[in-house]
Length: 456
Ligand SMILES: [Zn+2]
Ligand SMILES: [Zn+2]
Image 1 (cartoon, rainbow, N blue to C red):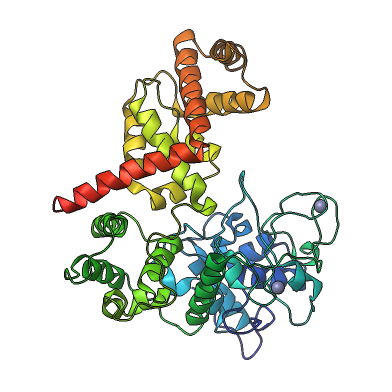
Image 2: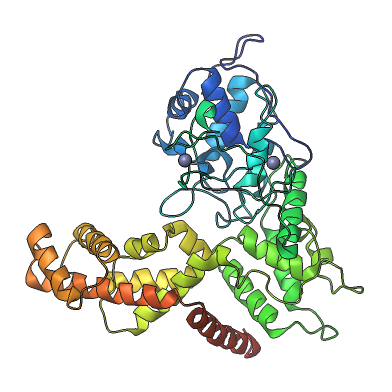
């Protein structure tokens, strides 16, 4: 247990959480970066300091990822509690997804930088930056947010002079300059967001973070199941379009099995269809699931995000898993597949738990010629080789040679690894074709609808 702070003196400066207006409260990740700079610490040292008395403290170094500070579903609670204790500031939880930790998955929030984009920023906010009052808001953590709610200009994720993406946890004092070329990331030439659908999403997210700031106690997850159950039980007066019915049946099935939590994308889809706000689904399920007497103006007639590029890596992973499972090649290690699409295991599990599980199970049951560790190393190296050099005609032979010479694989193991990589490469290439993806998804939606119609 941590000792009581003596009198009014707190171990860390009692800096308030900032806000740029309703729904624009500072993210705790930014708060921590600011605090670290104020105390002349790195964010990693700040994390070590905060967890100094915690015997169950997670490994130091997690703090470089925003999800460690804001959630949902990570170890952010220990850091949040320690920060609130050490600063004596008691509303810091409003800069996190604390209220949603039991109801929303990590999908749809920006978490780590692998092969994709890092953080985003508003170039106009950086231009107007005022050290004593400015902050980066929690809402920037949603990867579906396309524009700054304040300036209306599109968020950026790459330096406008050299095109490089930027690390999440760049220190407070260096954050507004490019890590590579040192050019300022601030400018006034940002493009205005004009896409209607994007504007709707941005407004829905702003309403959502405004609501987050007003709630102190985490909400429970039964409400979402209640919402889905009511949607399923809707009387015939208003039949749901088949894609929606199938989607709801699948979501219900997952939630009933406690397989995964909905992502913000799923919640937005349902909110768009019902013409309600996200928090209404989570707090007032009966109201949110009721058939609309007067269709709301904001209502969409299908799934809003099926075809958006934002969910593309996830869509591709479902496709690739299906291809590999029905092909004859040996399967590559799951982590290699996720990484090729820039996804984390958790993200895949949140998005498609059934496919995730069937793939990992099949991989485990396949003939073991190598340890998983060596298989991963070999496969990763092969995938890099394929990515670099174009693909020579006899590429499988060159992969086998590479594995034998560089990794000392025996012939059978090299053959297995090279075939797995060749199969993966082929499936990945096919999944880049939008037409191919759509045809696959249509087939699949049809199967789901049939499954739902046959009584689940
Ligand atoms: Zn802005
Ligand atoms: Zn640059």
